[in-house]
Image 1 (cartoon, helix red, strand yellow):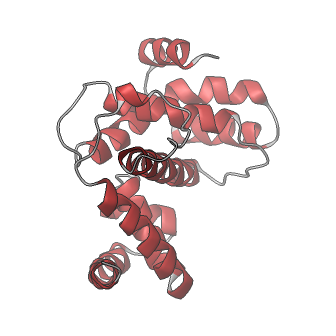
Image 2: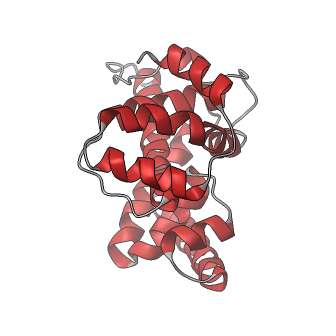
Length: 203
């Protein structure tokens, strides 16, 4: 399904979907039912776009289609995903957060390469729908520092990924990680300080 068609279907088919309904479709998709993803996406589109809007709002102001473009790219990558087993909707949104991180970092690296005069890295979305962030280097540096943190404390790195790249709230992050809200707050505060030191050290 072309991304443009997906957007039209999603925007006209959105409604309140029960958690069991979403979970059932996720499980069917994980079991290999390709039609389940097409039925799932309109139900979770609003939530994905809300998450994308949160993340893109941290960039400098630009085109109004930013969140839509990001969700489109997530959808295209989900189409190519197979063999994923989902327990519930929280795991689905955790996967979406991972994809948003990769998309945004790939875009930042591509722009950095272009600015240096090198061969432009290939990205699968239309960059015209994304305003150039004012801090590409910081996005790449954060990604590299997160990889380093993940080697020491995977949960804390995951919390940052979910919150910063996925746009999830403290409460949503706690649900995904299956820990308390207090634990996420502690992880978030520790990780912010750790990453700031790491990024400063790396220049």
